[in-house]
Length: 229
Picture 1 (spheres, rainbow, N blue to C red):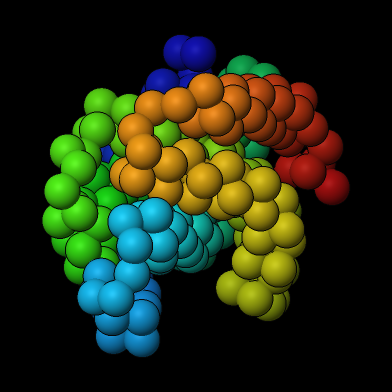
Picture 2 (cartoon, rainbow, N blue to C red):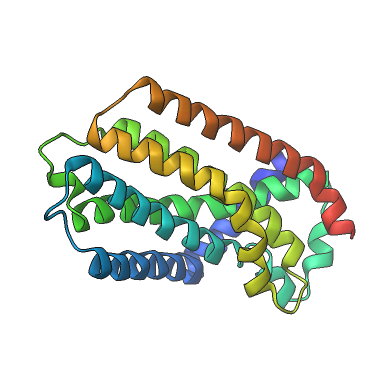
């Protein structure tokens, strides 16, 4: 964990100085929300459940695409500087390198989510349906969903970083794995916005916890084979 925290602190310092990854992901998420907002319109003529479903789908679509954009930079800065091999030779297990990169991707993505979720609810009228928004439960759902996005895209980012068409291959490889996370996050978010906390919400959140733990554990164990290959 010490090695992972050192790598994460380095990536977060670089992200804080340059802000290119944060600005790129935030701009991309905002652009997706704007396009979907213009295409789908506000809450007029829809029930509260339909409005919540549309808002949840738009928000998580924007976050999934933003995660792919952010993960492309996880290993790209070392690749562009010719230091990727030296990074893999850093003292400690290779799994620590993955965990450090995961934390470095997760930080900016959580900041983007903190902007995207409220903006999406306001844009699609989900915060004006007469029901109070359960922000603590919604924050828990957002954190679990974003962690699943970051865990999968960071792992596939390490696989595609040395490939010529990595910008196209990363979404193609990661998005099929992210489909369960998107479905669970959309279902939990729409239920929280429309009817509040229910046993079904607990089921979807339990699935997200299991997915996140499974993905992080498997990616940590398999990461050494990806960097050696």
